[in-house]
Amino acid sequence: MKNITIPSDVKRIIETIESANYEAYIVGGCVRDILNNTPPKDWDIATSATPTQIKALFSMGTLTRTVDTGIKHGTVTVLIEGRGYEVTTYRVDGEYNDSRRPDTVIFTRSIEEDLSRRDFTMNAIAYNPKRGFVDPFDGIEDISNKLIRCVGLPCHRFSEDALRMLRAIRFAGVLGFKVHEDILVAISRHKATINNISVERIQQELRKFLMGSYPNAIEMLESTGLMQYILPNCNYQGEYVILWLKECPKNEPLRWVLFLMGIMPTASNCSVSSEKLLKHLRFDNKTIQEVSLYMQFMHIPIATTRYEIKKTFLQYMPQECLENLIILKSIVSTSQKSQLINFKREADDIFQKGECFTIRDLAISGNDLLKMGIPQGKAIGETLEYLLDKVMQDPTINNSEILTLMLSDITQGIK
Image (cartoon, rainbow, N blue to C red; front, side, top):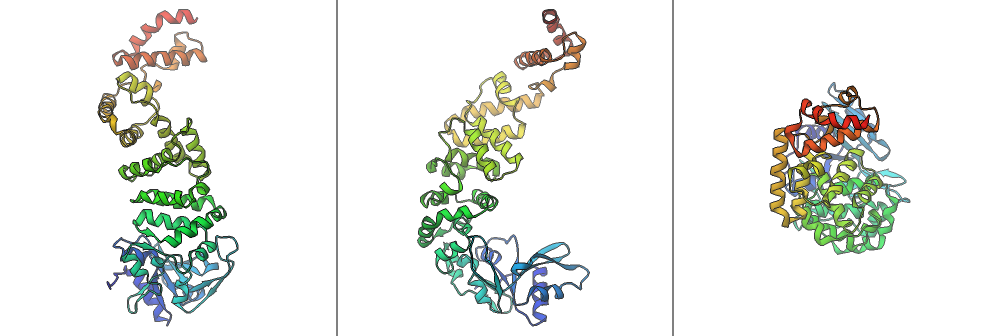
């Protein structure tokens, strides 16, 4: 079995704890990731020391301090030069009455007992540089076999925290592992308990899932019935969305667009429906607006002339969004490749030449119109829109003198 190279700060924490005659191991996701040849994002440490003892050990250094991030459940964050490492006391969870969190926790001196409360075998592995691996549930073998299996009975794990049902499928989408059949059966039976989970926690799992490299796992959301509870009133079309996501770069808004198109393909007001769903999932306004903008234009035919491109697309989309829209349309509409190439070439040329496609780019302003005698109010806006349309058809007339001459005839009528 491979040895694990541990960062110096993590090694320092473990050695400090062990120098006081307590145990300490790295646990969970960091061990799983290393065994799966993936760089860990975080390093979590489990210990036989209590939170009070950990705080005493790391409160005396000038570059080290602790923060009570989860003291009720035994977690203290040790900060070393500003970087945090969660250190959690070995514990056994009490009863779960809300399918979210234990009512009580009991500290223990046994790393095996601590590992027994965890969700999946691949996350129930501990490692210490001197003692090696502690793997009471054969998680190392499951990682080698690319298999997601629960610690103990899936129904027990899911009754403790219903989010674990979605986490199992999320891990499949991110890691490319197979989900054990017992887990899928348990999800089908307990899927309704996901309603006990906050929308914010569900959103985080879905976001991680969609950024994974194995979108085929979406089929498990549908086949187990879990999707109808986390994304109500959707009409899933898996054969399309999986292919689309495989082609999509790892850009979160773009992946959400394709996913939403795959679960709401027949909606006449698709952009409105997607906006409503994203609000339900508590997304930030920026993401909602960007995704809704793409959804709005995904069903609009590709423009073929410079005037149509300006009038239909450029007035409403920043350059970066337009480029992303082209990516999306090329994924969904492979038969339109030649049209998209022409569309992009024309749009790039419009941007490069700085051609006008918004009112603010006109060589004449509302103040200029007022000076010409056009009354303030609706007439100003209508006149600017008229000029913009003319300029989009012929960029060479975007000159204040030319536009003033164009208006000389119609100003008399307005007056």
